Length: 224
Image 1 (cartoon, one colour):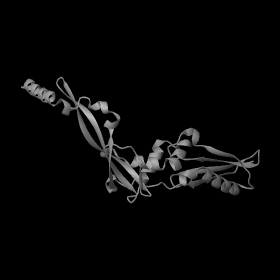
Image 2 (cartoon, rainbow, N blue to C red):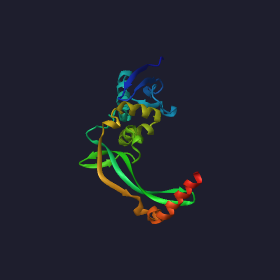
Image 3 (cartoon, rainbow, N blue to C red):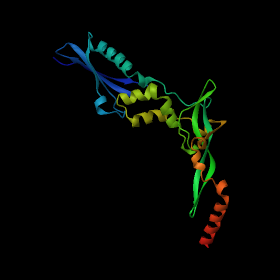
Image 4 (cartoon, rainbow, N blue to C red):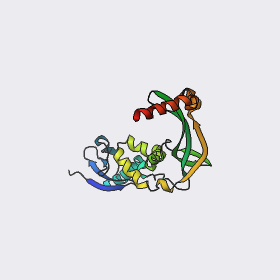
C-alpha cells in the first residue's frame, strides 16, 4: 500500500516553516512534522512532530496540523513591541563621585560629576529605565527591543531552539528608531556616590592644597 504524503508552507509573522503530513499505514492515522529551513535553530528542535492525528483523509489531517502548529508556535506570530518616539526618552542623570589622581608621590582625591544616560519608557507619567545608565554613545535601541519583547516573544524563541542569530534578525526588522529621534528627559536627578562611600574623600585636594601645589612644583622641576 502506497503511503500518502502532503507538504505545505506554514507562514508566521517572523518566519516561514515547512509542514509535512504523512499517513501511518499500520495505525491508519497520520503524522505531521514541521521544519524551519531558513531559521537559525538547534537541530534537535527543528523536527517537532504530531505523531497521532486522527482524520478521515490527509486533507483533514493537514488542517489539524496547521491549527496545532499555529497554536504551538504562536509566539512567532506576535508583533514586536517597537520603540516609539512619543513614549521613549533618553533619560539623563548625574553621578557624583571621587577619583584619585597622583602627582609623583602625592595622591589626592577630586570630586567629579559625570552624566549618564539610559533609554526610558514613559508609562502614566513615570519613566521606567529599559537599559542600564551608561555613556550616551553606548546606548542601544537593539538592547531595549530585546528587553521589552523578551517575555512575550524572545524567551519562547530561546526555549524552542531559535538561537541568538535568529532573534537578532527578528529584532533588527523592528529597530527603526535611532537614538537621535528620542527626546531628552532630565529630572535633575543626581546620584551621590560619596554619600555611600565617604572614605573616598579622605585625601580630598581641598584639605591638602599646599601639599598638592608643592607636588606640582616638584613635578615640573623634575620634568625640566
